[in-house]
Length: 331
Image 1 (tube, rainbow, N blue to C red):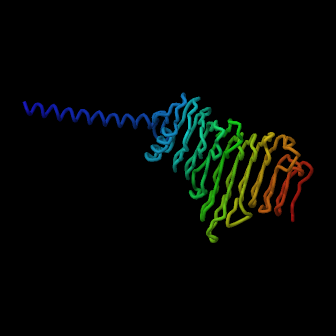
Image 2: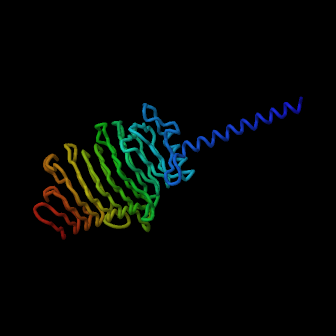
């Protein structure tokens, strides 16, 4: 009788352990959707919904963490859904955050929405600010990560909107502010930004250690659309080392000025290039200059449809093509 009870007890333990093992494996199979290179993590399996008003921040971050830890490397938010973000995300190294073409991430609150680490990437979808109190960055890259040419960091086919009407916050912010910090050779492709105080900001601050440099150089911004921003592109640095923003290429720009716009392009640094169209510059009050080459600028170039009356040049050897004539500042 005792033996029989012992046997039943052991069998029950084995059965329970087996169920736990199967449950664990089933959870891994569900979250590791697909096979091989097509494998990805679905945020819905971590509790995100996209069809209600619940905060999805924790679920999305858990999906990112799982993708990073298991080396799957891809997280997807699928369908014509609207996920809610009430806390910032850290997009960890080696993880691609991929949205459906019309999937929205609605940002409610005032915080840095997505901190992008080295070798991470974002593609597709809409990141929408719905809170008038928002006054931070939507997508943020920090030079402490030391982004370089062999890294796989990229942002592509993303729309950043501030629909709250506040015209606050920054759509895309690249920052290098400490010794040996840099962001170089990152590609930003097919990005649309509307309704912010600043659309794109490149900011290199002088390190406290005078023997060290911080720089944001050689990045490509391809097919960038900016609409209804107070300041569309702001590059803030010195002309050269120890803190510089140089050799950044803005190609295929489409910039729509609104009644709120005060500055279209403000540039410091050297050898930055801007090519594209600026629409309805006459809307700016008083027909004031909307493009400024600062006194810390040198050899920057602008190819656009804007007349020289809209350009203020305080720098050295900056080149700008205007409808009237090609002009060279050789002071």
